[in-house]
Length: 262
Image (cartoon, rainbow, N blue to C red; front, side, top):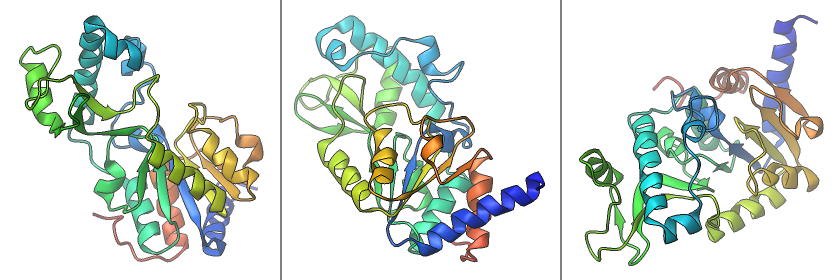
């Protein structure tokens, strides 16, 4: 079988699974956003290859750790700012609008799924779209915080109470938002099809969600450029670019291109 015919068989298989599914769920990682120009933090040249991640408890206790945290966030925000949804994000929004998937569970903090039009998005690791005061809970615009950082402020403070500000993202050592995690687990228990897209499936506890879906009887499709620890359990594994693959699935399903060409 040629590579082309093999690829078409995989696309047809994914489209077939989506047609048969009633509760399909998508799980996404950094790989879907690299196609929007956002570097994977773990890849060579990524933020975490240049800096040691700051643990949440260290951030709370140490001004030195706070300064290091905001140096990383300042650089990371430059990479996130201005990024736009790609064909992969838009394809998932199209699938949801057509009733082929019920939700997107994501490890990503960039907000691009919502920008693309996805309605039910569970952000396991929080979001870069706001900062929060750890004292009074007030939220503030990250653009304003970035302006302060660029102006030389090392540890930004809350305008309302003077408390310590932190990005709305989840740090190492910080618990995932309990309500989001509970909803994600419930979706994985109920789903009959899980599409794991652009994730190395190694960062816990998020990486266990596709495994939980599979153990509860769901089919598992993995679309990722590199191998994952769950490939051996997957019903279909695709190594091709995400946007291209999902666009082909949309066309195979003959869905209206609600968002693909925007």
